[in-house]
Length: 101
Image (cartoon, one colour):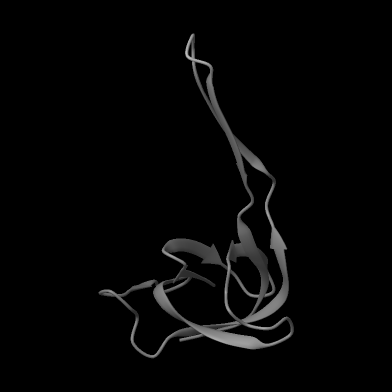
């Protein structure tokens, strides 16, 4: 059985006991969070409009981490104009504990 969940404006396909990296979730490491389900798959799939009634996914926050540094460099030739900025995205590593529904 698998489920499609939505968090942080993105959708993820998850299965029980799977470790997934998602956008930052405001929860301490070790706590459990319940997320709504967009679709349940398996023997008898269920598609929500927009959510599946009575279905939920429980995840456990493993740790908070950051992605690799992305460099945004802009240069305008012959004008002595340069700009360099870096960015590191915040992520949360979660483990799917159960899919109810």
